[in-house]
Image (cartoon, rainbow, N blue to C red; front, top):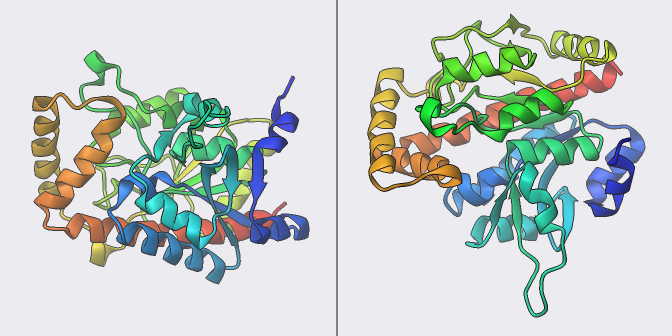
Length: 316
C-alpha cells in the first residue's frame, strides 16, 4: 500500500507553486544541494535565482526543494535561498536522511536545515506530483567502487522513482562507463539531446553514447509519456551538454580529476564528503574556470528542463 497520501502533511508549497498546481501549469523541481554544497557564496544564491528566472521565462514554474523547519519546502523564498547558501550546518539529504530532518529536535535544539541531493529531490518531487527535475550532473559509480562499493543513491532512485531528470550527464569525477552500465541493468533509459554522446558535466562528450537521442521537447515528452503509460515505473535521464563556449577540454579536466582524487585518498576523504571536496579542488586547480562552467551548464539544463515540462504538460 502506498504511503504517499500520508506524506502530504510534510509538504509545504510556496504560493507560486501552489497556484501553478491548482491551475495545471508545468512545474520544474530544482535541487538545493547545489546551493548549500555545490558552489561558494554568493555565486550559489545568485545562480539559484537566475535558474529560477530561466524556468519562468520558458513558461514553467520553478520549485526549489529543501527541508526547513521540519517540512519539505516545495518552492523557496529569497530569504530561504540565502539561508541555504550561507548556513554551514545545512545537511545533505538523500533517501535515508529524509525522516531524520522531519523528526522534532530535542529540547532546546533548532530544526536542522536539509539540502536535497538528486535522490532526495526526486523523492520530494514525486510526492509533490512534479514530473521534471533539473540538476547539474547526477551522481554515479565512483572510481574504485569495486573495492569501496561507493555508488551514489541517485542511480537507485532513478530506477525506482518516476521523475524525468535533466542534467549535463554524470560528473566527470565518476566512472561514467560503469554508471551507464548500472542504469542499463536497472532499466533506466538514458536520452540525449543536441548530440548523440552522453555528457560529462564540465565536458560535452564522456566518450559514451546515450541510449536514444531526442532533440525536441515534444519528442522527449512523447517518449516519457509512452514509458509511464506502459506501467514502466522509474525515472528517465535526459543528458544535455554544457554549451560549447563554456565547456572545458576533456584532457585537462581528466588530469585535474586524477590529481584531486589522489589528494582525497591521501587525506582519507570518503562518502558524502568526496564530491564537494573534488569540486572545490578542481575549482582551485582551474583558477575558477570550472565554477563558471558549472554555472553555465546548470542554466542551460534549466532551459531544456523547463521546455520539457511544458511539453509534458501539453502531452498529458
